[in-house]
Length: 566
Image 1 (cartoon, one colour):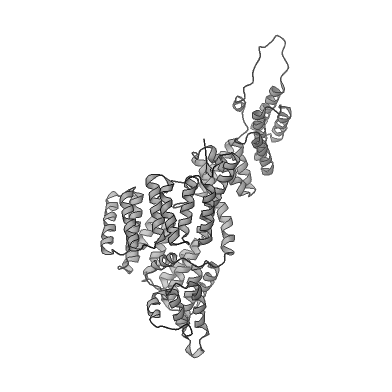
Image 2 (cartoon, rainbow, N blue to C red):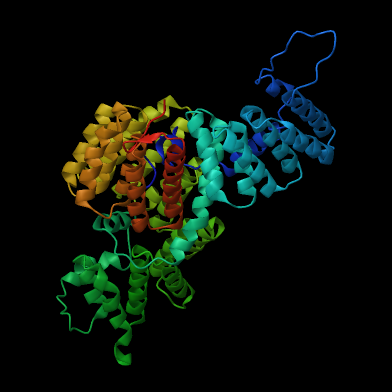
């Protein structure tokens, strides 16, 4: 069972739910929306000046001298004419004179003048000056929407993404998160900011032991692992800790969940006397060590070790294919998509009859939202291994997704029947109940979805992920975040290294407006997250919550550990 994004809440953004569920917002679309908004931010025209009504007195026969405010407005209007003609130097001079002439108590009008001068600097690509002028405007009116948007654009241009994010967040809060174009800009900034920081975390991460549930889930995705499929036979050998079989000892320790000792034991296989060396067992030991490094967040080590296995001569085809599948997953996690698919193609050429190739490539297709390709690969995987309940139920799930995309109600109904057939055929398979529950959640059939998640929990009562999804179900069903918290906290008690639990709990805390606790949850999730993609995602959630907290505090909206928007 995957710990990834199938939460059934695809319509909410990070700002509404603080979680990416499904494919991220297209960066290109957000960028275009952003730039189009900035283009619309021309100097405030005469209509803007109407916002500040200038009282007129009865005209005497002798013209009265203009007030400083009226003279300032005239200068501003002259600047607008220069701006329209692209005479930016003259426009800048007129706006500056308007600012110098305007009485300081006329804050609203001055605010507009600073914004007009910012528009000139924007045209001249002088982003530091844009920031300076917008800041001056915002000192007079902290909630001036146009100045916030323009300053955010310039902050982004000078790569100050944190400040850009806070300004766009301020606009989101002022709009009560109702402007979809602004939300797309916010998501784009979050994704970029998260990605920038994620690589540094991945490269400097210390080894961390995996949770039992993570290992169990990972192993369930392989129909056959040339090393870990030998777990039962190795434990029957009863090799002592002082014995001479490093691989057998490592497998026994793995079986006993003593993960911190597995690599050291496996390395003993390399120090055997030359006459006792078995090259196949050495390659198995190397593959086990690489797999453990994947579990322990040591991506670069794992990548080097898998590559050494793949490039070696006379390697058992099953070992080579398994190494290619695992390396493909690492490439995908670092968003090296072309290399990922190349490894799957290499695996097919080595042994086209191994179901795991198509199963794992199908999962990549799902994450890439390539539903048709996923459907094809899962069909092939099942034909290669027709007795796998995991492949069968995931094929059923992708078939249902395909039916939805193609609006085929008849095929969708057939898929729903197939889920029940699989549950009857494999009554002890947790994945069958869970995947069916996911589909029911997407259909908003919450009562039956909860029933099947409960049934799955009866089979595997220590599975923390099931409680996380039950918590999400409760939230979707009732609309009250507190309804889901109870189950997610239970998930953490079962497995305090369940990244999805902390991430989801943080999400619900954001929904409740409790941003400080949400940030704490996201930080815990970051400590556990495995891949660069996951870390980028969680960082974006954390940065979103931090930006909202900073802006809410600035606007005096954060009271009693809650955001309160009137």
